[in-house]
Length: 483
Image (cartoon, rainbow, N blue to C red; front, side, top):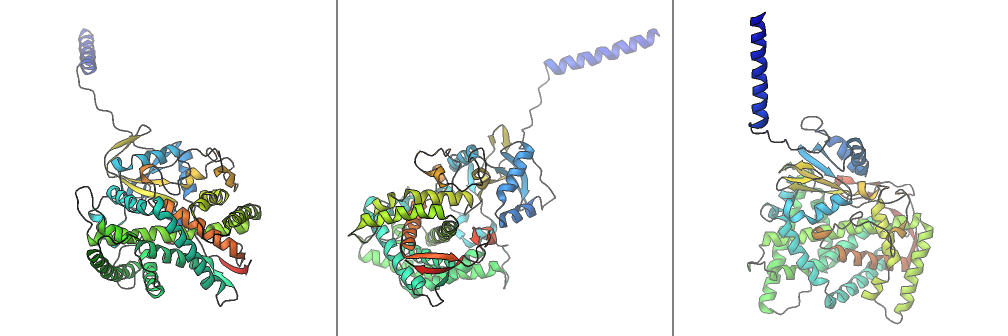
């Protein structure tokens, strides 16, 4: 018994001494960083299938809201497209990603985009955006913006006369197709300086093929979408090379030649080190400007026309505003900057359309370094997805979110900053947002002044083909009547 007690006492003493040593002297273990809640799902596949299905049907906000509620967090982890992903939503997340973008994130571009835009392999996205903003801002200076509005106004009038009023299909048109042709024609003129209709149509057909490959699987085999996109891209680059060489020759002959298009500005643009852009960079910039302006703008105009027909009460209000602007213009025939600024109800309507049906449902980024958000650790290399719709359709920020109500954006509306971000925000504001705003309003003014329309497929759905932009499934076919 004494031996047992001695052994027990010895063992107990060793345990106590060991505990005291670890408590007072041993180096404490480092706390394991806490990553966001969530699940990576199935190996490799993760939650990709659920995400892509929701993306196609315009329901990413539901995919995000369900998991935000489940994990009680505005950031959660998942696995998409074979990548570890942190999905963010909410105004705080929007502000964080848009304002910290240059320091913490780089644009995550799928392999297909990197191959279709070669300069992405050596031009950081933050540098890319800064240069883009410098170039676009040149054309929105006070001395240039009036000329830009005049060009948009006259081209809108000509386009509507030739392709809408003068069509040979019993006054029936596919709105999306025609608006896209118009916005492309205007973008090519503004960005490259081309106004010949045959050249524009040639470029238009190739750009349509090119853009279909942006989110396609990058299998470069004959017959695949990506192969066709690469082929179209190569053809576009050959044509752009000729245009760039011609423009350089013109600038050598006349160094003071007015920079009336973006390409001419890009050729003359120097960075902080006095270096000029390479031809590859210039081509990618121009292609990016055109794609970013004509497709998204055409979608916005088409969706706005569709909503206008569905909301007769707001249509009446907007017509009153546009008719008053037309009366005040007399005897002037072309729109000017002051006219655009008066289109407040029209622009509020457009903003509510974009809140209800985001043209783009979200953006991808990649973490350049470890960072912390709301006490959660996001490791370097993780991909980031910022959902716009999950915020824009959240009743906490937009009361009664399913109700269509443009007054949210009128006057002293109570829209919380960074809740509606169709054009980005902070340092990541879309370089062409003001260009797009002017173009949308100029075109809507002209189409409302000339036409009324009836939808041929009133129940037409809006989907996101190729996982890109919101598009009515039939392109929004309408029967026109002149005013």
